[in-house]
Image (cartoon, rainbow, N blue to C red; front, top):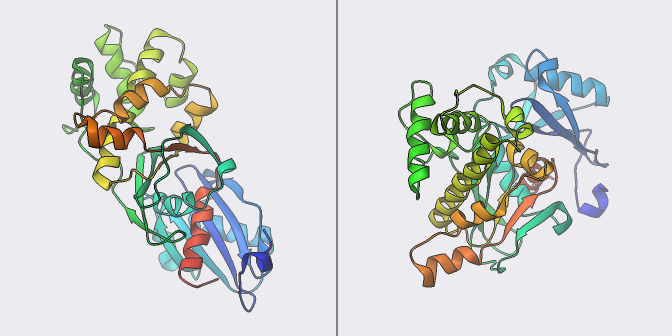
Length: 320
């Protein structure tokens, strides 16, 4: 994107590195007075720590002059190496906080409609989804173009259930969790939680509860246990979104993102029926259920929504 056309005004030789730091990868783009570079992804395991990763990026990109980091990081990220580094951190926010700000900048070709709903710009919006954990953030409209982002602790809500089968699954997940008595939605609907759900379903149907990774579960999606796992995954994800939408009055729209949900979509495994059955569930048919049914739901179709959000946050602060 051309810097002049976008209204960016930056002085000196300063360069911003916009970085979305996940559990396994770091995505980044470099922004200066001449424009923004195409986003790039690097694998974090190839570097000693985040500081050495950024130092490598600076060298690789041939950046001269001042450098400032604008970072979206998970709450679990290790930032201690920066304590002994000269690198300047301009902005540091939670990853879903950045994604929330970026989501409202997306064009329609950067999202996929799962449910059109009804456009209502006055209501809040939200972004959520399972990656390693289960993220959640809200976007509160200030005017037609500006939003205040409200971050949360994500899927650490206590998991709810509505059917006898779901009740049993929550109890079984409690048993398979390692030294945890409380079952949260993240304990079921996330990269960490999906294996718990798989083991619980194995136990429910009299199979040996083996420990498997998410990728194997998705690769085994056509087996009986695989199908049951994905169906209940979608049901619990729908219940989570139901709770989050009502709690945050986010009837203006839901954006879904996260590594696990993207992997499910890429394999053609997203199951709308159980998801929307639970998401739109409510006893108050005239008001709440109607509002849920009218809530648009879109899947983010770009890997770089957090980077777009970081750029928007810089613009919000008048830094560019």
